[in-house]
Image 1 (cartoon, one colour):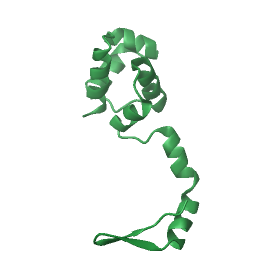
Image 2 (tube, one colour):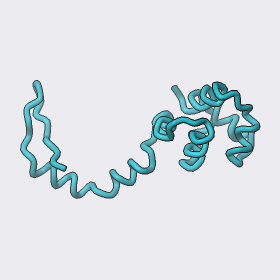
Image 3 (spheres, rainbow, N blue to C red):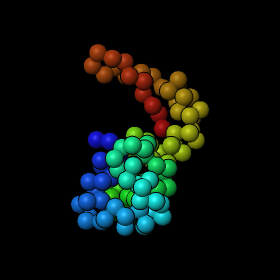
Length: 106
């Protein structure tokens, strides 16, 4: 489901008017309307987080619907790529059905 449809459904479930929602987000109703109609890409991270907070949903779910990793996960992925690569090189592979899967040692 596109982000706009997802967030509009959640907003309507909470019975929040679109203009009121945009006001709480401190953005123009016209811009938010375009997001909900999938005429704009999902907004910046801070708006996604704030929208999730207002709607009482898990921000991670909102980021997934926006086809993005949540910021904390992006930070985790970016902070340790060298260590993960070293672990994958040094760990023996384990057999998993028909494939050899590298074992990651944490």
